[in-house]
Image (cartoon, rainbow, N blue to C red; front, top):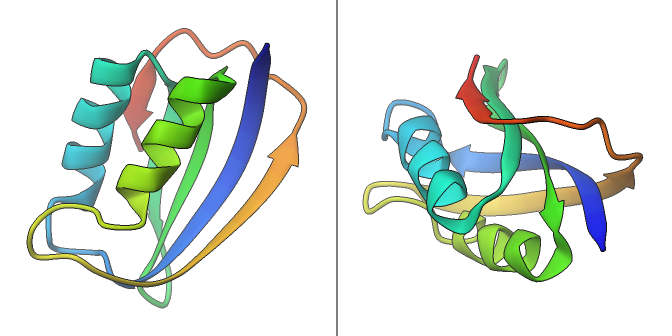
Length: 89
C-alpha cells in the first residue's frame, strides 16, 4: 500500500550533501517526492511509495550521509500526491 510522509530533519544536515544523497537513496529504493532546505538548518522531505520502501528510506534519513549529524526527525503522514520522481528543490 502506498503512503505519503512529510519529514523534517534537524541538525547538521545542510552543506553536507544530504539532499543529493537522499535523492540517490530514494531513487535506489523507488521512493518519490522532493527534498528542500528550510531555514534554521532543517531539511524538509515529502516522500511517498510502498510502505516498506518508505520505512527503509526513513531509516536512512536517521543517519544521512557521512558528514551529517541528525539531531531530530519529525514525521507526519499525509495523503498520497502521485509524485513520479524524486527531485531536489
